[in-house]
Image (cartoon, rainbow, N blue to C red; front, side, top):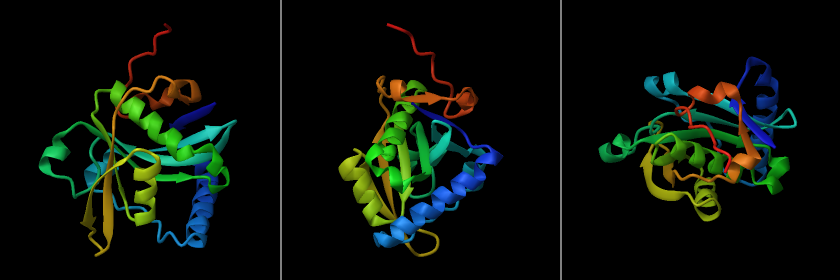
Length: 188
């Protein structure tokens, strides 16, 4: 079983190693520069860095924002209840485990249970956006210019309850403030 919880200071070495492994993997695959998008002040205040662990080992990391992240969304889109999912990094050695699918499904389920309509993300590498849309059911919204003159792709995933994901991923108790507090899961 996986657990998703807020990142702790003692996770930093594992997260740094995970990031280094993903950057090397991206370079080897010629995917392009993987970098963190700068957050606005409001996003920074709302951002919750999280880790996903398996048997205590950090296998992925993501940052969750309880709002539509970044510029480029229309006023109508920004007004919709959405959770931002950014800075996803998964262990490339565990590609067969489909950790990005696990995180997407967990985020979609959690967002739906807390009254959000969407999970949204902004990604720079076009190959990553293509992977998200072709393999993980993300919807491409548009390509936008970034402040540094580059481009980023805005993608979104409809929030929907996925009860089965709760058998695979456990929220740590400390996650209660992230994207609202989901209602308790009833045994049926």
